Length: 208
Image (cartoon, rainbow, N blue to C red; front, side, top):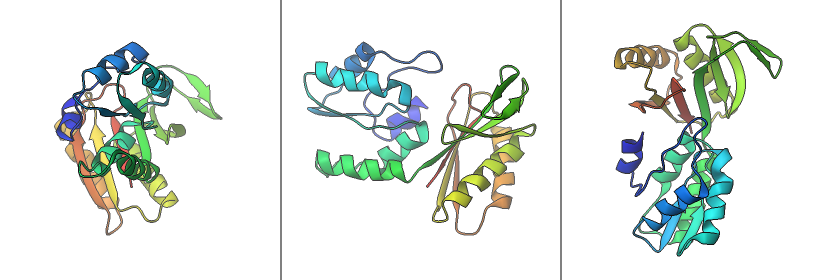
């Protein structure tokens, strides 16, 4: 995942993850380690937006925090960045890109529980749509197809789907999933499947 963001032009990546949200000091260190007078911070998680905004007050340069709440939103924002534009123009373009992205996540239940009228059993596949539990499944590929179908139904203008497969998914499993998804996609939808290597989430899905 870090390599993917670096390839898209990110200067510094702050390590984090489940229960390991970076602190204001961590973010500030990355800001000061970036060779630029203007720095854009992409939190990728709603839980660390506040820490990132605190870093603005302590930074020795101009810092703008873009309110990205997921990895797919961050990718969309980076794709919209143009080095030839002024900072304000880039901010507006990146925000518009974020607003066009629907985020899907496929993970698993670590224990039996009940959430938002869903009874969840340990080991079940969980499908989250824009951070909210959409349904549970027993079959991974069926979960991906069902989640994409639900997301597409809410945005008829979608034309691109990007799927990042995680550390617990082999290349063979990802290829099998891709084949199953392509067989169900409507005409005119472009699909890209990439290795994200992320923990916890089997698949991260961006639809725009």
